[in-house]
Length: 77
Image (cartoon, rainbow, N blue to C red):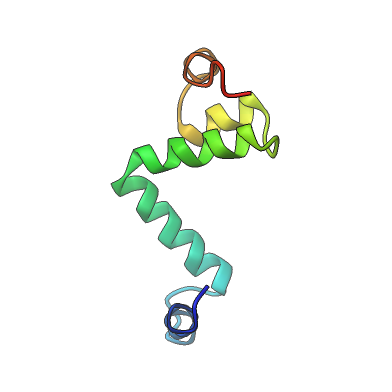
């Protein structure tokens, strides 16, 4: 995280809008995923591709069912 962004996150916490830096970053990510659902899908695919999450977890993260995710991820492994 660059210095300016870090200061902005800290300011959000100091203002009492979020309890922790992690909560602030999580809220920002949730907003990004809500506004751009394809980003959530791509993040899930990347985590699956890197072996960091199972197919079931990637499906859950992407907001799809197991079968749909399996079709979307075919050939990604």
